Length: 399
Image 1: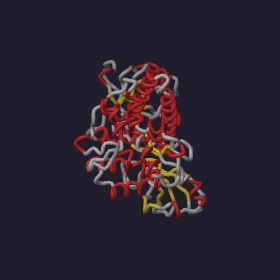
Image 2 (image 1 turned 90 degrees about the vertical axis):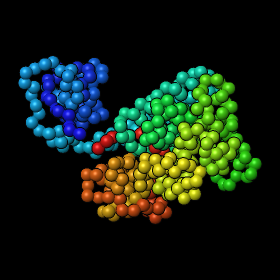
Image 3 (image 1 turned 30 degrees about the vertical axis):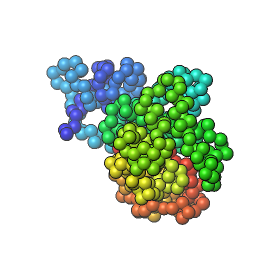
Image 4 (image 1 turned 90 degrees about the horizontal axis):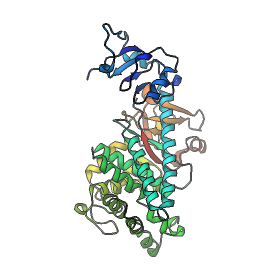
């Protein structure tokens, strides 16, 4: 596909509908990227307030006033891009993802607190949260996953719900499901474990093996959640199905109803897979090992197509994976990229010294192998926060 023509115009000619490129380094303007689609007058005013007299038009040339000889940019777009240091842009995008994740977890916690006392208020706030998640997913045609966390030792029900929502929505997006399905998946994921709040902490947070009685009680949480939400009369059936059946497997070995594939909604199957993977992730703490265990032991419990999509989304080295690079440094994968062997990483040496954020696609360095947590020094564990709980959020940085 040919690149869009770049035309230079004075800032006074900017109109809503244009997509423009700023002749500035990313660090010298307040926008997420140097390429900006003008959708609001406030964006135009912000650009006029910058130290620029012109912008480059990337798209929307038909909106420009007719002139006899438009001034063409002599240099190709790549030359303009070379002025930008993409590392701070990538770090900025990951910061945004982290902030959005924390806000989503907090908003979800607020919703949970209202579901009994103010169900209509809870539903409205949940719908708003879902729209935020959908907007973040569709900000880019090629969203990636980035590593996020709450800073807490244990993963809360709400934190787990957001991470499952993100994985499930990414699967749905890859499969080109409708936005209605994506919204049902997001809403069902947020609430899928709300029934656990009716399970005593002594059972829910028990470190050792559960007794048969405790295990059976815990397995009632889908029913508890379904009953709690269904009695409000506010939530869609597809979402309620996710809450009730997110532990069902296509081979009939799940609970609470031992359903087989034909009786499990496709949207519910997606959340079941994402939830199953997250369960292994919290158990083994290493994303790649969790994916391997899922593939080895549960491949008959989920459709092969869905597992393939999950593998594609997570990549060979999912965010949170500890790896050794070809220059012998240790690193934690922070964000997936199109090149699976050159993700964005936080790295250090074997002792944990010389920490730095690295943009491997700009280096002649690749991932060499996965490193087990027990093989890391205390310094490396501390620097990389290698034993912190892992959650995921959308990231739309595309370089």
